[in-house]
Amino acid sequence: MDSLYDISCFAAGLAGNIFALALFLSPVTTFKRILKAKSTERFDGLPYLLSLLNCLICLWYGLPWVADGRLLVATVNGTGAVFQLAYICLFIFYADSRKTRVGLS
Image (cartoon, rainbow, N blue to C red; front, side, top):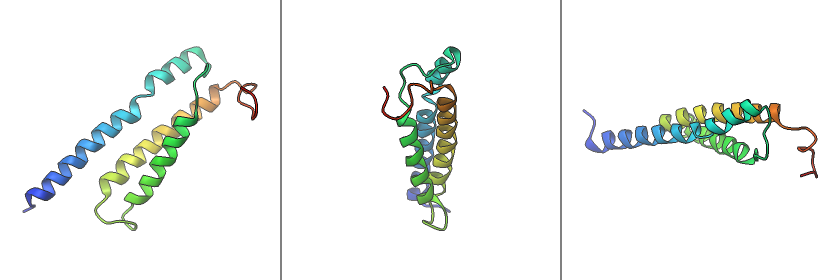
């Protein structure tokens, strides 16, 4: 039988995954607005890129051959990476190419 410590760690990890999933879903309203307007308007895409990089680093940390017992870390960050990649693809698709060139604001 698992100890109370193991059960508590799993419960905390599961709660963390639920909260992280809610965090990954928080930009959905922004992207509904982008889809409706067919433009990124004045939104900045950098937070989505940085969040993707964060998810990929944490996903690497959670892989079984890197650290044992980190399956919840890998699953939530893998899911987060998929969401962030989708957000970035939509952002690039609807970005105004004239305004997103390097050096122009």
